[in-house]
Length: 298
Image (cartoon, rainbow, N blue to C red; front, side, top):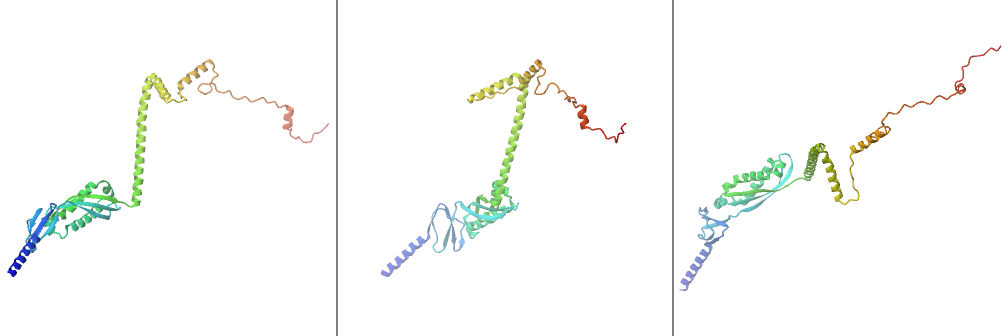
């Protein structure tokens, strides 16, 4: 009897151990791929408790969540011969657990290597301006390049994003000078355009004031009001030049000797040389008579 009870206890213990070994729990974020005697089963184990055949089944869990994989920074030369260092990030998820386990040994490592080679390829095909400003198109190109090998592995590429583009210091300084020159050019163009528009408006205003003389006086009064509103102790009053010319014309009419507009009314008389006051005696001293030789005396 003791031997029988011992055999039944051993058998019961073996059954319990077998049940414990065959009992598995699959999480909500996982799917279970079962290998029975080395052959993958078509049916994928869903979340929840599941039973395996002891010593015959092996189950491999596959995470179905979206995986965020950073791509290490890659050095490359763009199409316009600029050395850059670019890093990216890949978002992917498994859509076919069986193919992801059977078709590729380590799909995480495979996706990482494909992402690095694709990033280097996209760097060599693009120019520097595209890497800096047109990243959306490059992201789409990277996604297409990763989709080609990933689809047979049962993996879907959700999206690919270029994170950062590192430039050499010399290139950064050159781009800074270029941007500064561009801003200076725009500033000068805007200033010149403003001056041109202001000149047109001033020309129209001058034409309107010329047609209506009273407008000039109103503008003068408005300027005086604006200046006086600032509570200044000194008031600058513009004086029309036409009024000065009127006063000059009136003064010239009263006295013709008064010059008009700062110019003499008559041309100055030519200078008269002083009369020659040199006497004959002085001239004889200054101009002695020529020597006529010996003179005979009577």
